[in-house]
Image (cartoon, rainbow, N blue to C red):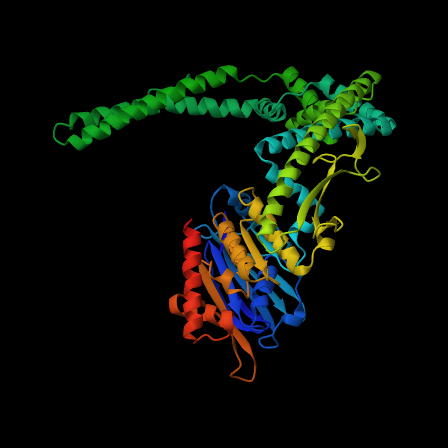
Length: 587
């Protein structure tokens, strides 16, 4: 899960500089009209990659800065953290990540994630997986057809997701085979020409038959043969020095003899001083080592032979290898690797009739499998759509929309687009890795009203409530862990307002919820209550945000109820609301 722990806004609209401490449950933001509540939602939009509006930036200091601390934990946050790390950002030791967005009055925008400057698109990526903003003027996530389909797939459950994974795997295999077959047929001439060149190269390499590391080995051996006399002289002198040789005289003692004399001399005095005995033992080890070197030098001399015929063979072999390295790689190992790649590529270039027939049969088999899986996915979606529509409709009844009904249309994807076409459940449709369906959420505002897509069938206030009902139904089915609702309660009051508060509180059990509201019935359900207050004492109007608790919170609810924060009756009513909400949250 990812939770936004803190939000700081500087120089945005009426907000000069304020910090919002947020909690993991339900956060409510209230305040008088014009105090700057909307700027909080605007700041969230900027922080998560939304479009920058330079007109909202305060002239002083000339830039707006929005900073947020996002705490990542649990499996759901793995993808977010991995993406940030891959991009070069570094989460803090406690698992949180600092996000920042700066917008100047000239419209320039900068973003920072995890202490690293990044494109604004990176904030958008984090935002898509972390936050969903629902407001009357926002481009709502669930109004996008692709997101509606994805949301329905999440709601359908694990069995449906497993079926969808099988479809995606089969689709990928099918398109790979079909594309491979088309490419082999379309580029047969070029493939054959390339294959001929590869075969010529492979024939040349096969005739020479280079071995791994052979060029270095031949170079070393050639150097030994070219300098055989010099090497022999050096080895003989060394051998005579360490162990005596054919020309050594009695007057020229060898190294081993000298070491032996030194050892015996020290041993004779070791009884007087044990330190000399230790040195004598080390001289004995040195003598043994010298004897071994002498034996190895003798063996080396026995193998050293100036062989002109062998040297000529090495010259010819090295010339053959150089001919290969001039054409195919920098060294023999590279030539061998080129040959391996060429053999693999030859199999890819095959355009024989047998292979083309085999690929065509495999493509047809996979097409049947994809069509079958797409049909099963479509049937599963239709079943989930009925359940989903019924549950959302029940939620709408408690949100002052008792006559409204949600429909989820699962429609065949039209042909004629860029996707391939298959017959799915007897209908020709365009097929993607997600199947052959288009999903559309529709609203019937009242009996007899036409069924219209959400963005056309609902007013601003209704749309926010529909989004709330959908999020309540989707709770626990995946999606962003932080949900923001701006004026979700527009146009409602009384018992409907209490129901909205109750549902938001229920949603906050599994999500972090931020709500901008003007209804005390909603604010009473908050785990944390933030008030945006306007200061008009100076030449410039500014706003700040503070947390209210206990008596202050009751006074804020009283202001929202009757505009009288100091009214005893209003405060008593507010305390009653808080008590009812607290009791509801414990259920």
